[in-house]
Image (spheres, rainbow, N blue to C red):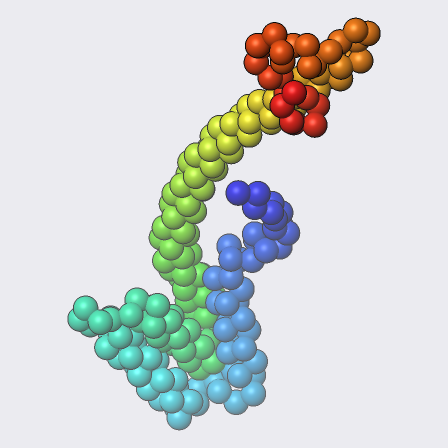
Length: 201
């Protein structure tokens, strides 16, 4: 019930929101480095990137078919296909306008897809927090009832101990009275009275 409260660092909160832009920017930067090192107008490199992109897209299509399809694998494969296509075009093109245009479109698409998953995660998190708060209230109510019951039992035990102590003091005080004769009471036919030691007199 007493779960630790963990405050997440602002970088941990911002990292998932910045991940799509960081990914597409990294792909663009690496493609432009590749462009400067011989990929510009290289037909062989363009064919290679096209084949890799089509292969990743085919893997994504296969992973999303049927009931046994895995959406995580399919999404990863389609993202890899888009990244390879962006890298191929950015590496082959000789200017920046087309690569930057493709980068902006890829970034917008990545955020559009990520927003769907973020909404789903947010709904699941809110449902979990509601269930947790309901369970905490139920446990808190149970704990309050048990605390009241235990307090009542303690008070009953204390009152019983106090009664026993007062009875013992009264028996001791009675035995100490001058002229008190237990045998005289017994011979008179009175019932035996308990003493402080618990024996009948």
